[in-house]
Image (tube, rainbow, N blue to C red; front, side, top):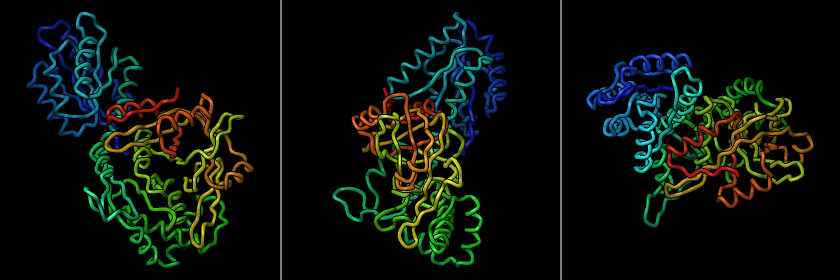
Length: 445
């Protein structure tokens, strides 16, 4: 995971009152941000003119900051703050200080109106450095900055077939891949499933059994054959080679009909190591999962789709083919590795209860994307419910509004079927990330 690296500058005008407070406020701001555990790169002097602003930008570029905080000590001219906007192009927080004579909050409002009109996005805080809400606001937006930075460096592998024909566009890439890349900065790498299976076939049973012995220590019970488990260990080892070879952030892999059951257990094992493999070639949700993991600084994520609507208990049973990290079961004893064909597998995970989860989904094309963002909770899953659901992944997902209304809003909103489910509340950060990226958002009402 990338780390927060905030640039901090303080700007003022020599013809406005209040500039004498600048040095003290800047020092206090650095102290409080650092005390909160964030790395901050400070331009040590008050910025009074465009020359100093350009010099500060050079320092921030050299330090590779992924967000910026601009303290408006007094009202300042647009053309000076414009330098930070154009030179750094990172998520920027504007900090208004609470002194009426300075018109600091008015300056933030004014420049913010220009940014919005020009298609830029930003955030702001108001208060003194010792105000906890101010520091927490900076932290929240700094996470967005890291997530944006992370997206620019994301390399997602796509294993499986692409078209080798076209009407009037790319040959072995889709225009959709180009659109998404231009919008987010993500890079896609194409490879064939045979590149993974060929490596797997070259691994001896003896090597695979050694790795499998370690993997079993963090796996649930298995009703698949030992032969299938050994083969899955080989695919796991091969996938790790592919990850290293292509420097992948994550991998979206072909699934059924030709490779059903091949990557499910591998995804589960790798998910508990912090690497996500999507088994349906779903690049968009792979991107969303990586972003959520960046905002939360790691952890595991479940991906599934609505299996039914339980209006009586006001919940949506979410199910999937079975590739979720087994640590998401309420007990490892309840996770199960099931057979799928001769050597394939799928993982059964009765998802544990969580007081707060963030759920997301993405849909779109042509550079226009919509992200569903909502806070919910998960309820416990009984053994009978799990078996009735196919002994795969089962999540009893609940929101504060009726379950049927949730599905209706998703359908009317044009959302696709997948859900991403992550423990914790990252809705605020995700909304701001989408705002910065220019994604439309869908929220429950």
